[in-house]
Image (cartoon, rainbow, N blue to C red):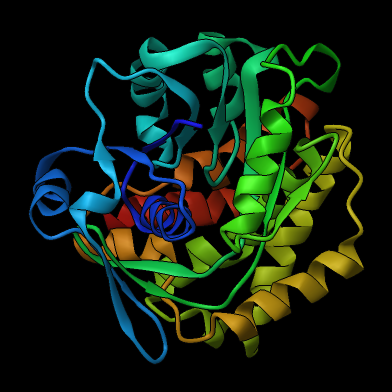
Length: 304
């Protein structure tokens, strides 16, 4: 099975490393300094007690001549449209795309290129932080919740989806297949809504949000998002979600969230696809979301 990985940030490197180490040599698409590092030294993975290197002979740099069965898009939201166009040109007609992003909107952009029946969504909770070009530090172990955008019109090669689930399982990535990926997308969105903008604005690691008043603020903005989710037809068990939030904060207490890392590096953030997406949906339904709107504006203010 020919698996392409598009994007070599924290998630792309984690996937490439785990797949390659269990016998599934990936095809990797990258650019700039990350591509140079891939060609030169490989992917460096720091764990709690060791440093491992995925050498260039253990993966293939993707070129225009190769055909893929699976394309995994694991870039930031602002690069999804560009990378899915590149992936589509190399994807077998009965292959499919797996999109792993924070926020909302990416699955529809992928589907507009390859079709709903070839679009798979995924949410990953494995801890991974980028500390350099194709260099990551692993955090806590998690899972990958994965499922089609349109279960009723799934048009991929017979048995291919099942093989992907097996591959992810063999790679110790703990896949959890679901019939409808949208509730998981929303739950991940609400957790990001609670953590990312507050951590970015305050410049603090995740664990600080376990204490008042930031914990109260995180829960309040998450509640705003949950109300919007209900209007979108997504049932949210808020007590369970609140417990999940505190579990994530405890498990990743020493981590800097991706939005804080972006702010520190002067890079663009995904706030428009997290806070902005909630504000957009709220306006459609006529729901006030003042906390979300304020956090959205404050994060934008950090880059001014």
